Image (cartoon, rainbow over all chains, first blue to last red; front, side, top):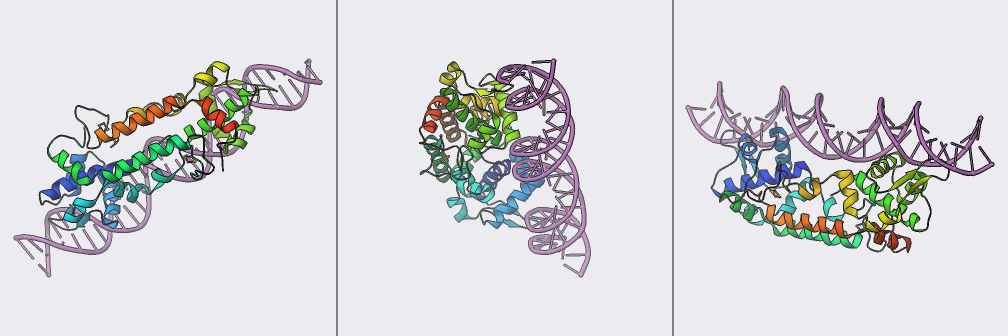
Length: 144
Length: 144
DNA sequence: TTAAAATAAGATAAAAATATCCGAAATAGA
DNA sequence: TCTATTTCGGATATTTTTATCTTATTTTAA
Ligand code: FES
Ligand code: FES
């Protein structure tokens, strides 16, 4: 569905968002401890998300990652998937043809497009903020 | 979503099914020419599907792959996905946690389970027969 | 009986995804 | 200014997926 890199990124951002909501910055060691992701790989993914301005980073003591108030409100899962995996999930053919084309559809096109749009819709309507709040309240977990 | 191996397998089986409907066996060279898949890789996948009794194979001159009448009626996409990729797509956690657990859900569990079940339902209710008929009639394509 | 036509299977190769390592750069605070 | 802390970035390593190659085996038509 989405890559491991993307999964690590989403979990990390949820943790960062929860910390940012409390005015704290999150450092890598802390993030991976709570999200159960490999440290170096997650650091690389977070670097990519920083480039895309989805999160902000600060070097040095008291540094770490944070999400500013505006991003905290507006960022949704789709932003992260797009930044890490690109738009393949949202546009590719479900049977692996070189491109999806409704004029000359593959055998699963009609049924696949429905699913694909639901995934896209779900990603766009699910904000990091709501996920971070549920995590903060203990209703959900980031590792097991 | 599903692996390349699985995509090659599904496209190949649709072609085999369409040929079987006309009482013809399909040989590998023919299959990959029409489904646009790499020959050796597809042969390996078809071997796996033969082991799972989803298709039948015959060596020698006049040999090739075919689908018997019973399989032609009953096999659906889910059978092929299960045989090649296993059940990961149907049971894994959407955020990559070691397992999906509704008692201690990950942040996307509720929304992801809905999508996951729709995919499963789509796979189970989509028969190779209906896909093969649409392909045979020219309504859909297997390569581009 | 034999040669051709086909799949079967295992070894190998290439590419992509996942993950780690380490030195450099930046920064806050003493 | 010095030092400890932290991310950054590039090189490297490992694993998995995708794909190919080679040889063996089976089947059948002539
Ligand atoms: S052509 Fe395959 S999903 Fe659209
Ligand atoms: S726990 Fe993540 S999808 Fe169920």
